[in-house]
Image (tube, rainbow, N blue to C red; front, top):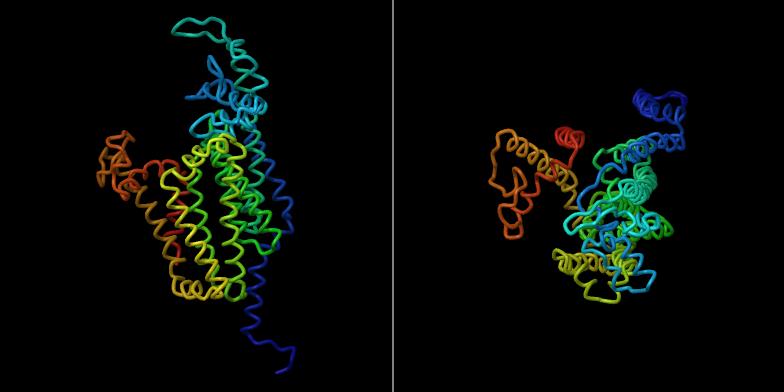
Length: 430
């Protein structure tokens, strides 16, 4: 056989490769990566168009407490405390809502001026406000929220692009998030929730980038981004503390999911050392930045203790995460990750099993929720399962029943397309 002759198997394989590469090559020629990113201007423009609609025509619960009441609103209190260096008063709420005060109040408080200027007539049980001045104040406080979330969506776009290496997927993901009616509506209200969702999700993406980093400067940049975004999420609402153990779960899952590649490239030990050292630094840095932006936590350490370490058993969770992190680090330094290699080798089946279990549970909960709603029943007899009415304190229930009681909010918070995709992945996965 001459050198120029090719076996049928090789020729067939090359033809298959050409067919596989063809769509990607065509897409690259038609729409370069930079153009995919530029196309994000369109959904971002739609976001701003609807985001600025009727900003002055509604009021939600407790908004007046943040901007102003007959005395001083929480946002005004925060800035006044900073100006007067009365650090103890920077704790303005038990949320704590500091990001709202920083971003919304940075512009809105100057526009608001004196609270009494809006009052036309005040009696013992009621007060008449000037409608035009009140609308101007709401516009002043809400506009920065809409703008800030819109600009932060650019981070989501770039993070998706770096994680997936697919500009079209990054564009679609960021666009669907920003055009979600629920998230768009949240971004119009003067409430800590307006920033909780985007800072929380952005911190998750930043930590995912940190885990996938290969160069020291990427570890530094992505770790710093995670630290800042996590701190801002906690400063929005303390519920973001749940990301402490969640980040450890992400670290363990990454080591499991990428185990074979890391072992083949002989980079498992290096990856474990980098991430195991970075995890506590990110957590400690986030807590430090939290305290720096809410100085009351420094002046009164009991505030920090109660806010961070006594929140929902967080102290025990941090201890568990610390022990796991220390075990990973010692194993990598002293045993060259031999223990992790042993566990990773025999735990590969979890890569397929765990996602299937999660998708199955969500699909099953969806079916149960639809059944209860359709037949006005209470399948499994879970409290709050039908209409959300508190029939007994949730903390008095067993842990499985507590989790089951949260099924309805999770299902109603998931869009039909998300539930449909989970079901599709469940039945199509190997």
